[in-house]
Length: 74
Image 1: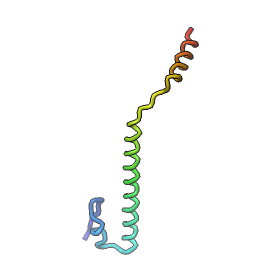
Image 2 (image 1 turned 60 degrees about the horizontal axis):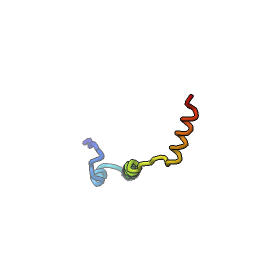
Image 3 (image 1 turned 135 degrees about the vertical axis):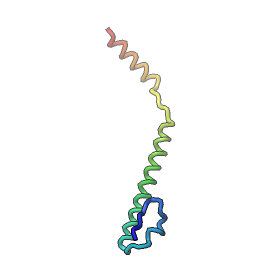
Image 4 (image 1 turned 90 degrees about the vertical axis):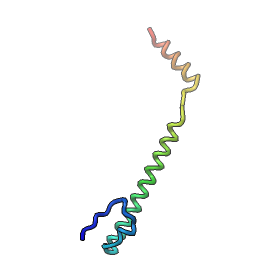
């Protein structure tokens, strides 16, 4: 009998016809996948939070840029 395992199968179904070595490898793989997924979700939430910030240069900086622009115009 051939069984196909997908990400959607519960962990309990994965233990049906496997050796203890295979079971350990599968559990390590699932744990790593969960850690990667959690890390990715954290990065997405950080990116969304960073997109909330609006950063503008200070008035003094803008004035310096305009002064420089005027001084180089000839």
